[in-house]
Image (cartoon, rainbow, N blue to C red; front, side, top):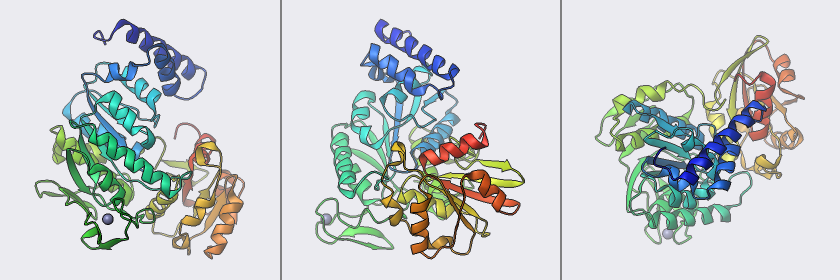
Length: 412
Ligand SMILES: [Zn+2]
């Protein structure tokens, strides 16, 4: 901190004060407003705060917050402080708050909004950039994610010192990371193929087989991976095989964990050091949390876009327990709910399904089309009362998730 220029020091102090006041006023965790105030005083603050630290930037459409948490947990095995924007404030102000809140931390693991990656690479000169996946978000159309991939590619080309850890199974990610001077490829899997039928290089149809994907026209193909997720095991870059045994559920989290292990190894934390830290992560910003409510055990899953819903279905308990689906369409969710039609709901057949949220009628129409029986409820508590004592899985999009957390108490 002492090495910061005076203006940056003042900016940081003012930002911290604003963040504290925001917390005291009950307006969230203060991580955005603190950064906003700091940046107003010193527009170059992020660059100054990042200087001299080893920075990891994590981005992708899904799994950013969880992977950021897992990488930070893995790096904590090195025994030094790790700065991180643990609550998903992933634009410039959130990054400023994370770094100014941990001025002595030699490491920082920062979640970055996928659209901001190029400018954040410029500002923070990261040692490592982690690229998870790229699919359409609730507000996007396919053309926009192709544009994002192109910007990633250009940004990485202009950052020769940066090491990229990227998912080889996602063709758009692999193409974007292909411009990096150095890349470590991870076979992290890809369940959602709908946004990558075409070759990002030439536009031809991609072919897929057990070896991965390749373009028959230009020859672009899946890079060979040094780290592999295979069911519940990880195969590391030396060929070592270990069971992951995570507490967090689902295939998507196993994939995030393998990415985190690959990052940790760059910094000298091997799998045996890092894996116990990953297993100890039980929830991430309220996600996967288990809550008791009137004799029912609720498990909270956040899913913001088609690929995210597919991953959430993958996490549902196989015992046929009831599931509550909650959909809103406020600004952070995207006003347009047509994305609901991109999700295949037939996997829900055979379990009681309840629907709630401001746009539950849109969801109801969609479920009817897939011949999935359901009941409408006005809120989470009505759902709790409708199901027998036991488990209830809850899948909600962004603002619906926050509303349910508020209902259940901010302890979750
Ligand atoms: Zn091609």
